[in-house]
Length: 516
Image (tube, rainbow, N blue to C red; front, top):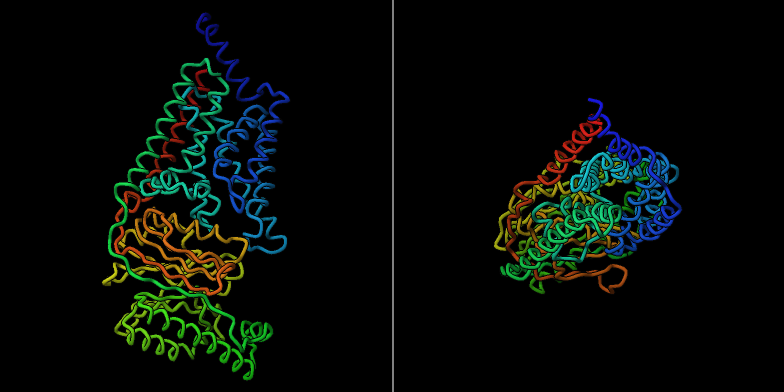
C-alpha cells in the first residue's frame, strides 16, 4: 500500500500545480495582449475571420497560466471591453440598461474559459482538448434560446468561407463553432507539450485532417451539387420618403393614444402617400415580369380601420398581374395595448390572402413593448415557383424558429427586414446562414441595410445596399427548388452531442481527481 501511495504522489503534485497554482510567467501577459488585439477583430463590425481562430488560442493560454480567479476575471473584463468595440452601435438598449446587458452577457462569453480552466488540467491528451470546444458549443446553444437568439456566435465570423460553411447543413452553427474553438485547445496542447511530443503532434494532425475533410467535402458539395432548378424573378423594394410626412409629435401622440382628429388625418394622409408609392413601384416590377414582389419590414404604415382598403388595393394588383404580393404592414390599433401589428400579408395571384404572418421575435426593448405577437408558426404555400414561406427580420436570428421552414420543405423564404447602419451588412450576412442550414433560398429585403438574395448553398445572387443604391429596389433570379438538409431533419443534434460529451468530461475529471 505504501509503495502504491508513493508511486502516485508525483502525479498528484502535477495535477495540483496545473489546476490550482500554475507557474505564471511574464509571457502570459504578452499572450493576453495578443488576445486583446485579435479579439477586437474576432467578431462583429470589423470581423477578420482568421482572428476568430487565433484570439481564443492566446486567451486560453493566458487563463491556463494564471490562478483561476485572476485568469477568469481578467478574461471576463477583456471580453466585455472587446465586445463593446466589436458590436458598437448594434445593441439597441439605451442608458444604464446597456451596461447591465454587458455585465450579464459577459458571463456566457467567458464561461467556456472557466470550464476549461477547471476541467482540462485533470484530463490527459485528446479528451482535455474537447473541454473548451464542447463548453463553447453548449454555451452558444443555450444563449441562442434566449431573447437575442444566435447573435455573437463564433460561427458567423466565418461568413464567406462557403466550403467550410456547408457544414451548417449538417450540424448548424454548432459544428463551425466547435472547429474554430477546438483549434485553440489543440494549439494549447501542442504549445504545452512541445513539438517533440508525439501524441500532441498526432492530435494536431488529426484535427487538421478533420478540418481538411470538412472543407473538401464542403467544396465538393458546392462543385458537384450546385442549385440547378429553374429560377423565378423576385423583386423587393424599400419605402421612400414621400410627402406629406406626419411630425414626430403626431406619432408620439398616436402611440400614446392621444392623437387628435387632425393628427389622425395627418397620419392617414402620410400613410396613404407611402402606401401608394409602394404599390406603384410594385406594379412597375410586376410589369417588368417579376412573379414575386414584396417590400421591407413595416414599410407600409396603416391605421387598423384603413387596413381593409389597403389590402383590397393589394389584392387588385396581385390579380391584375398574376403575382404573389407580400405586403409588409405596420398596422396601428388605436386604443389597444400593445398597438402594433408587424406582419407580412401574402396575396395570391387570384387576389386572395394566403396568410398573415406576425413577427415572432420583436427586438427586446421598445419594439417588443409595442408589438402584437401570435403563435410564432411559419406558413407555407405551394406555388409554380416552389413552396414559399416567410419570416420577418430579427426572426432569422433564431435557428430553432427557422427550423420550421426546413420542416415545411420551403423552397423560397421571404424575409422583409428593417435595420440600421451599424448592423449593415452584418445582420443580413447572419440571415444567409439559415438558408444553408435549412436548404431554402432566401430573399432578405432590408430597409436601412443590405438587401440580398442567397441560394441554399449561401451564394449571394443579388444585393442592394440602402446606403449606396440610388433606387432601393432589389431584383434577383432565385432558384425555385431547395433541398432537405441533414440539419433540417435532425435539428440541433450536434449541440446535444456536445452537451452529453461535456457531461462525460465533467465525470471523467471528477474521477481523475478522486483517484489522486
